[in-house]
Length: 231
Image (cartoon, rainbow, N blue to C red; front, side):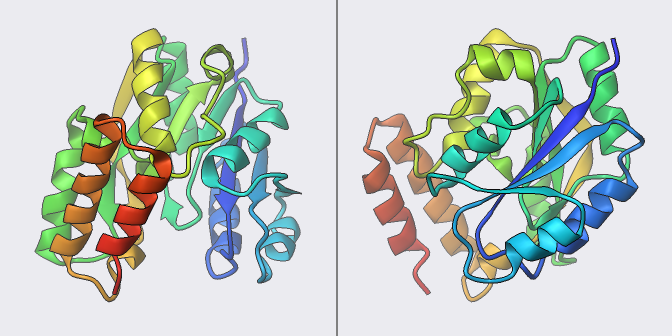
């Protein structure tokens, strides 16, 4: 059986990043990509036009929010492997081969480790821990692949989630499938840290996870997260 990967990129005002990412993914596809799908949340910049001119299939999601946008993209995908990629991240050049081989070796889902686009030691310290299978590392920045079969069995992301949707899906996917952490890195932007201290971001992330695990509402988590990241 020949596996094909559908890449799904949720966007909102990503004109600065989207064309470079799509061109990068296309140039390293190894003929294993069924399509690149951009699902937009109502951007007011040139995201959709740039994505389309770069060769992606573009949709405006009927519901804004990363979970809903990724589900909508998945509903349009023809590949038997779904690969969710954030607009400001670059997986290794070997991503297509890595994912195909992982699925052939009976892995149903997985991610890469982190490398930040900064040489500061504090970011290298942060990235080091993404090699471990810890809940705190289940975010989507490292990109995430999952077979269409497992994604469907799990009913995908939870559409009503406003935050931590990727943590939730990864935790559920691990219960039913075989999970792979590649010994390679995805290059991740540090834009979340711009104008904020490293400690401020870590504490906001930690609080969001604590609230999520304690059963707090999505709105409570979002409100607290935004408050703690306020510049």
